[in-house]
Image 1 (cartoon, rainbow over the protein chains, first blue to last red):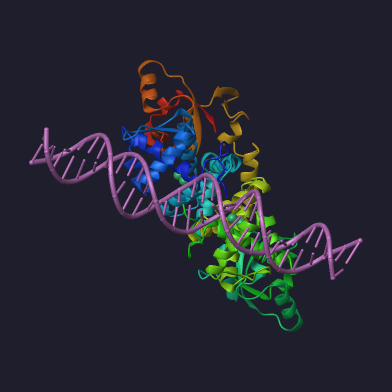
Image 2: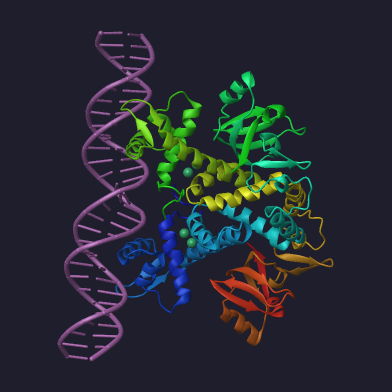
Length: 250
Length: 250
DNA sequence: GATAAAAGTTAGTCATAACTAACTTAATTG
DNA sequence: CAATTAAGTTAGTTATGACTAACTTTTATC
Ligand SMILES: [Mn+2]
Ligand SMILES: [Mn+2]
Ligand SMILES: [Mn+2]
Ligand SMILES: [Mn+2]
């Protein structure tokens, strides 16, 4: 539950105060209690409380009725958080295409909960996309197009999916999407069990009831068996069994 | 600061209790206060308090000295959270290669702070990598190799970087890495300003002091100007100016 | 320089979410 | 079945982090 900026554990709230003070100090000559309150959308008295705690930890200074300043240690931590904020914002907004306003909010929420390790992995990833010519290529030309249903690969299942995400086109004919068509790493919702008799009962017992969400974990080399995670359990299915489970994308 | 599972706002803590109860209910016949306490590493009395709040909101039932159950509404929310947890775990662990233990912790931390919109964008991305043949291809063959310095593209800057991330190989010779070599979306730390005289002063005034982190925002089509974000400001630099700023990867 | 407005502070309240210590009830076992 | 142990509960405490209301200080304005 505690945030983990690997060093000393500050609360998410205090980290945001530090971050806000740093940003404000670069926007204005002097940072006042009121500026912080406005920026973080809290009352001035909440800011006062936070400043008291930050002062105790020697991360900020605040003379009564006067301006607010960060200590060098405070500024260092603040800068780290701000860097994370911007990194996550770039990742969510520019790469994953989360709307910028949402991305802004969520960056500021999760920046407090990621380890340096994870930040580094995200950096690697961004580095690849932006710096490696192949990354730029595959990203712009493949991913972006694939998302828009314009993938140039004939075997791309994404391409065959109707916008509703419920049917698949096979040699011109539309057939319902079943578990058999899904590739690993993809989450689907069970729509209908089309099996009859014993197999039907078995599938239902295994937990494949309509409405249930599941996650396709792995498909063995020859497409059989298929490993899915349903309700936290890992289950194995034969390919022909999987064809009796109609699903839709979630 | 509040978590945002788009519906009614439960606290992150209560969401974790729901999640834990759901998981336990699938592992055992009956869920007891003690099981939850052990799983979440809190005292039984904390569990009691949480159960009281959950019961008030009709998400769980708990008979004194008896077993704990989720209501249908509670189970629904719990499943949503669990789905997010697993999705994020897959993303961090299998795709970004964050060590699984860390990924586990962080998934459970940030699952409470992401909107459905963002979850959908992550799903899109995973879908691409796992379902689109080109995604599988580019991911396994390009990204993974690129990270290991085995990129097949001669122009890949990643490939030229020494492990220390401080020098770059240009026609066999090693030269220090400067801002000129960096591509957009990448964060670097200023190592040294090699400019002299007036330009040096100007660069320092602009905020390019050693140790400072900056983020390369954009490079114009012809490599000039270069737009960087330093200390929250956006600054524009000429390519020849950028060559006077030695940097290292962060 | 008096007065009003803006900014800042303090005290007191509330909710969440954890804890320990002391107690009660249920389950096991000799 | 009495005694012991395990499980569960309650009361009381602590810390964070927000709030409002009432007050004080600073700043602006006439
Ligand atoms: Mn934040
Ligand atoms: Mn932030
Ligand atoms: Mn969680
Ligand atoms: Mn979780």
